[in-house]
Image (cartoon, rainbow over all chains, first blue to last red; front, side):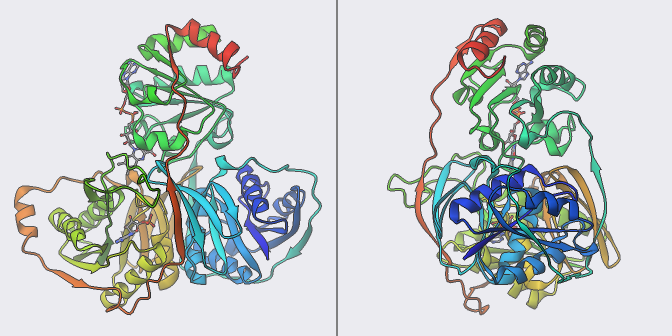
Length: 309
Length: 250
Ligand SMILES: Cc1cc2nc3c(=O)[nH]c(=O)nc-3n(C[C@H](O)[C@H](O)[C@H](O)COP(=O)(O)OP(=O)(O)OC[C@H]3O[C@@H](n4cnc5c(N)ncnc54)[C@H](O)[C@@H]3O)c2cc1C
Ligand SMILES: Nc1ncnc2c1ncn2[C@@H]1O[C@H](COP(=O)(O)O)[C@@H](O)[C@H]1O
């Protein structure tokens, strides 16, 4: 049976997370199609057709799909799923919003955040804040899953030449409406795409002090993240939260500054290749996962780091 | 307006739950249990809607072992009016939970169902969305702000890019994110009052719900442990290590 991957896109470009989801799909089987559901999304569909190893791109181009509202997109996916053995999407907020609704429409049990493919029906996924890895076997005829992007290396963005096929089905439940978005524009890389991340916690004390992190981040070409405490306190916006219930990241280098290392924070970053912790408390749990720990006052260490880079 | 809130009994968030040594599942022996933190936020939101005069009744429901009655009581102490406990001996999958909640919706006809966005044990992030499919109602997941206006609601959602605002028709499903509110502590008088509130008990079978599992947990193992690292003396040593040992900066 072939595999359907739902693309994460903005109608113009395919988001990087899609490439990780395709990689997971290709670990299951070789016959992989992509669904681009959106409005005026032909540019995104063209981009999807170039992804390495894709068989076919299905394009559902309708105003009802513009903002990936689950009430409209889930019935579309459920309808298309009849032709597939697996439906996958990256575990982005869009993916997490839509996939369970698809699962219930199909009367199947979705599987969240798969981190490895063991066989066509058996997958691994972390639960309990990543403190346990479950191996789960599904008996459902269609497997509906989200993919932990950090667990699968992305496939090549270019090199494929899939056929593009229009899907005419329109589902407009008419029960929800997109009103707007508040998005902070930044020249720094996205958290989930960055190779280096510098994160700040409650120890930063306020939003202005995050400037100290931004300076270091800019020297390293890094993205900036945060703990829940820093977001809750209003130092930085919610999209910067790393953790069990925020973004899951695994960059080459993660620098945690003024972050204690709660279970929930570790769940979002402990698969990073190299972890650095800067904390004035030598007993902070973050040091248990850090490759390099510096016991220091961050207000002294960050300017020094900035100067040394 | 009637609000239904779904609360789950889970291991307390301060506990690092480990796999059993025989790898058959999580080791929950002697682990402190609590109401799932996101569910607590959902309850708080319902109580605030009642305090604002928008909600008239708050019904709280939990599906789990008999002991989940404690979490229903907690919600009653926070301000819910009455409880429903659906008892099962096995851990139900989210599909089965959503079907139980659908059956409760059919009986109770709520205007809003509030859930947590995620239970911190299974880390599924499923149930609200699945209940949305089963009821055919609108869903607003990851809510950080909820405003009711007649027969619709405006919800601000925490999404990857920032904050998204949607408007949904009621009845609807709303799942709580961390910034929706800061839950209160139950006062002693309210804890006492909660003891007198009604909790109706039922079972999935009584509700006509098939809870047969669709997945099998073959193994539950600890994740790969990280090698212990070292402490560096100062920033100069740190930069040197990152450049020359880890080779992650140039
Ligand atoms: C349901 C739920 C979900 C959650 N999800 C997440 C999540 O996704 N992500 C997340 O991060 N958390 C999450 N949390 C919160 C988590 O439990 C912790 O409360 C949080 O991670 C703590 O953030 P922190 O480390 O910044 O703050 P704290 O724990 O207060 O630590 C601050 C640290 O800064 C250090 N410090 C202070 N001043 C200085 C200084 N001048 N120089 C150097 N060091 C200094 C201190 O020594 C301390 O170690 C969640 C909690 C719950 C209940
Ligand atoms: N057994 C349960 N009983 C009551 N509510 C539940 C149960 N399981 C999940 N929920 C609700 O669904 C939310 C999301 O859980 P989950 O989909 O398991 O991550 C929780 O925060 C609860 O509001």
